[in-house]
Amino acid sequence: MGGMSESVPVRCPACRRAHVYNAPWYPCACGAPVSPPLDRGAAPTAVAHRAWDEDWVTVACASCGRRNQWPHPELGCPCGTVLRLPVSGAPPAARPGPDPHPERRPERPPDGRPPFHPVAIRTARDAVTAAALYLRRLGYRDIRRADQRPPSGIGLAARGLLAQVDPTARPASLRDVECLWLTAMTESADCLYFTLAGYEEAARVRADGLGIPLFVLDLTGTPQPVNAVADDLGAPDA
Image (cartoon, rainbow, N blue to C red; front, top):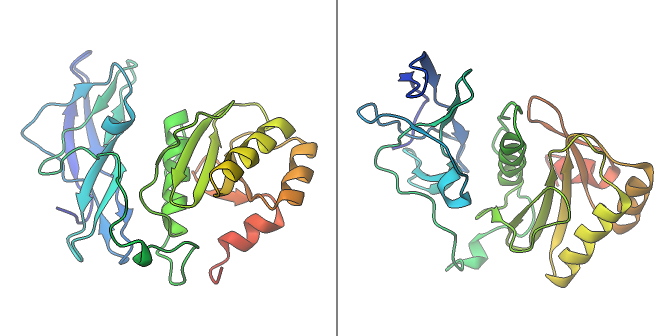
């Protein structure tokens, strides 16, 4: 079901405007490109309400058979309607359960990372997708919405990790950074912070003292390290 991306014609059910949708592709852990298989025989649906489980789809890699969760294909129409493209043969992504082989999952980012292919950021959801893709590149799996909602932004979690994504235009504050660290401490997890608008100086100083990697997401969806610990985390041999 994986493979190179494809292009399909799409017509908006609201305004009847015609589009050509190019399906994105994502890097599997084996290095092969994986793209959600689009169902050409089914019509797109308008997204009225967001549900985390519906925003992701499970896709198998054609090269190694590994099944991973990726963002469900969507297209924004100029009329304001968000269209969800139907995917064939792939069940909706379920909330992950316990890993039956925990020894096979890296606790820290592994060597031999696959190339990172960012997603351009136009919406808050794009920012979350970009952060999730980067966490996958670092070696974390089963990325999901965090159980505890942060004071601002959106929380993501993986085994041994808690990440906060702030897609607002406000720089992250000292309180934001400290709240993330305290929550991660209660869960015995490491933590990372992603923002679009950067960090207040006090927040950067505090993050340096606590060892929290700070990243700024540019509009291409590429996380740019802000402090030394983030630089170390993103290094190829980390």
